[in-house]
Amino acid sequence: MPQSPTVLPPPAPPAEDVWSVDEHSLEAFAERLQAPPTDRAWHELRREAERIALVPGFERLITLDANAIKALPHQIDVAQRVLRHMGGRAILADEVGLGKTIEASIIYKELAIRGLARRVLILTPASLVGQWQGELEEKFFERFDTPNEPDDWLNVTKAIVSHDRARSRRHAEEILRHRWDLVIVDEAHKVKSQRGATYQFIEKIERDFILLLTATPLQNDLRELYNLVTLLRPGQLGTWPEFRKVHLVAGDRRMPKDPAALRALTHEVMIRTRRTSVIDDLNLPPRRARHPEVRLTKAEADLYQGTTEFLRRLYREGFVQPAEQEEVADGTGPRKRTRKGIIQLAVIHLRQRLCSSARALAESLEHLAQGERINPAYRTIARQLAKRAKGIKTHAKLTVLTDLLKETPDRVVVFSDHRPTIELIEERVTKLRRKAIVYWGAHSTPERDKRIRAFHEDERSVLIASRAGSEGRNLQFCNV
Picture 1 (tube, one colour):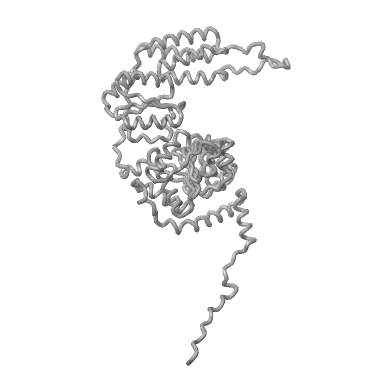
Picture 2 (tube, helix red, strand yellow):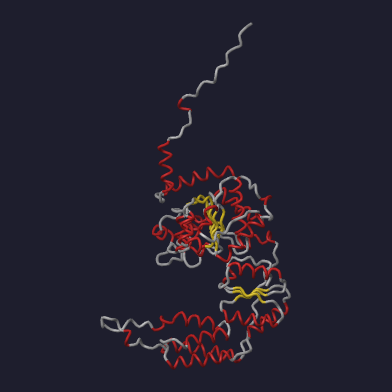
């Protein structure tokens, strides 16, 4: 019998074709990842490595059918751009109501399904913790914990926590023990100051991907935008002196030298969708802005004029000199005369309340009348004006609001910054036999959530909110 031919193993590849890892280079690379950013070449190398690692996996979004939402075209486009071209690090700066939360959640799901986001941290104002948790569970079937105690972090991999709680010492220690795959910062404009505790805390978090959500990435000057971009991608805009020299008009931190060049630079890390560009996809009713005329009653007009004149005179001559006992201890003379500065906040508050309601004005005038640095004669005038304000029973603004409520059978949101005015509105709404739901910053987070639910459930209710009510809450089920 002829013997079977011997089958030899394939020849080993030549040594130069064997793929191997240079352990020394790998160790050096890992050390540089942990080090602070250095030159721009290193930054570009890292960006390119991340781009190569991410792009092949995100040609198609694969979780859209696994959610209880119908994502709008612009939301899908934002998610794809962040994942394909921005390496999972971006500022989502869509205008209010266009779905930044939805966009961030889609990005999270796409990362999670690929095993790239197992540890996720969402930082948000306290009033929005419950809203984030509810939307992720109801719309994306994702359960996130909301740690209340530092020990809760031991077994947490997906968490939603307020800015303030996260940066508190005991919670921060636990959060910073871990490396997070994805960090989402909602209302990111609240952490835009590089000197702020929250900004510095976020800088310390080890993370792979980060999303900053804000409808107002620029509020005061371009340093805020620089800070957000730097938090997102350290080195993207260089150092602050470099950025200021290249991009800002000397002496004006609000004015860029070349707006188009700066826009192109920030376009690499920021996406801003405007309502006008997607109005056809939103299928929302047209926005009709109305400015009803408010004619003050004679008593209100006289009070307004009298208080305005009082403030003018107060600034000129209503402040007293520092007392003798306030001379400095070494006897070199009196302390610097601060005059308006000492009660400046109280006076500014009074001016704001002058335009709010007579009840709010009365409270501030009474407070001003107790100021030790106010000339006694002016304290007397302040008390007299407060008495006149308390005596006003017919309010022109309330009359306009009453007419509006009578012609609007469904839900209405009313905003005011001043508690006495909110109480005044609450009384009028109740008198009209409609449910008044007051919502302000003093309420706990669970109480705020409860009141928003009550507003959603009652079609004729009126939400009377302070500024806290405008902070990220989804009130699009209300039309007025």
